[in-house]
Amino acid sequence: MAMSEDTVQQSQSNWNWLRTLGTLLVCIVILGAAVAAVIVINQTEPTAQKNNSSRKSAALVETIVVERGIYSPKLVVLGTVQAAQDVVLAPRVSGQVIEMSPKMVPGGMIRKGELLLRIDPADFENAVSISRSELAQAEASREIEQARQRLAEKELKLLEGSIDGANRALVLREPQIASIEAEVSVASAAVERALLDLERTKIYAPFDAQVLDRSVNIGSQVSPGTELSRLIGLDEYWVMAAVPVRSLRWIRFPDASGSGAETAAMESINAEAKASGGSTVFLRNPDVWGAGVGRKARVARMIGTLDAQTRLARVLITVDDPLGLESGDPALILDSLVETEIEGQSIDDVVRLQRDFVRDQDTVWVMADNKLQIRKVEVVFRDIDYAYIRKGLDSGDEVVTTTLATVAQGVDLRKTNESGEAAR
Image 1 (cartoon, rainbow, N blue to C red):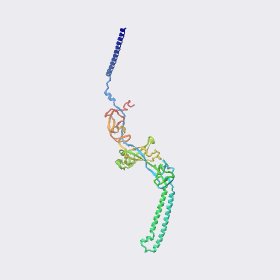
Image 2: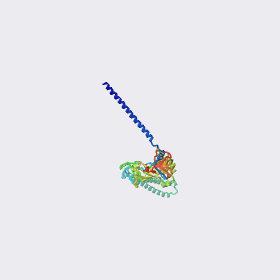
Image 3: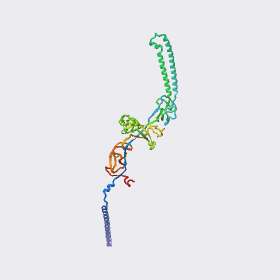
Image 4: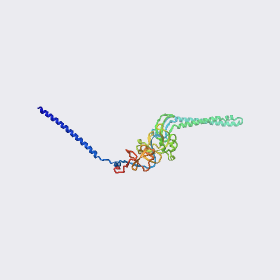
């Protein structure tokens, strides 16, 4: 029985050893097969052809052909809308407001010479009556004194030769006549003053205007200096645009007079500026007017100082019929910011190129003989969209517009429309 158990244990031990040996042999076979497969793959890998690789690595690009010509740059800056005529009405006499125009409300439109309000004239009418009475009394006194003078002249003829020159003036009552004449003049001036005060009880519109606000009502007691209303002229608005000093020489002004930091820039304006007037300006306010809507204006003059904070020059732009009452153009809003596009003076013999195509350090990529040329260019001016190039490009040059990953002089290029596959 004991021998039987020993035999069984020995058989199990032999079986475990054989199974371990088999597993080890299988792992060795798999490892050998993997090594053999790697060796076969490396030996059968194709060799790269250098010539073909070089020929197929030409970069596909898009180009545009440029032309030299005469172009007008556009300066796009922000401007603030201001009133050209802005007055605060105030009375010149005291009294109570008894009448007011129905147009005297915020936003109301009034015409020049239109009656806006009237102050109670009763006191001033009484003053006119009193001053006229005083004038009449002074004139009556003058007539009485003149009659006395005529009588004195007759008496003087009877005493001819017995009265010297000094006493003669007294006899003829010349001092009394002079005094009465002065009283008449004072009374006459008082009448004119009373009439003038009476006329000032009526307040008229000084020009075609829009009412911005009103500070009084019927029954209000006013006096000289009291604010009645604020009026804004309808004929013209101003837009105050902030322009970099370096850009002033490209703006056409109606005249070449100037002062301050901009004088040197103004001297470069050509002679035709006077004849043609200021540069044309296009105003846009997409938030209010909508996209694509604008209106024309014109450069009027340059303010002779720089802004203390921004160090920008200020250019005054005039806008006729600012509310579009006659033209139907969109209305300007006071104190709002508008985009001002100023049409600059023409630049002769330059290439106009989109700003994105002028690369770092003022270089341009040009395709010549299917190779890349990196050219240094002289940029005369840049506006919001274009760069104006004086030197470095000629008519007919093909400028590369595609952004390249590898940029080097002489890199092979191929236009996208040179093969059917690239041009699809």
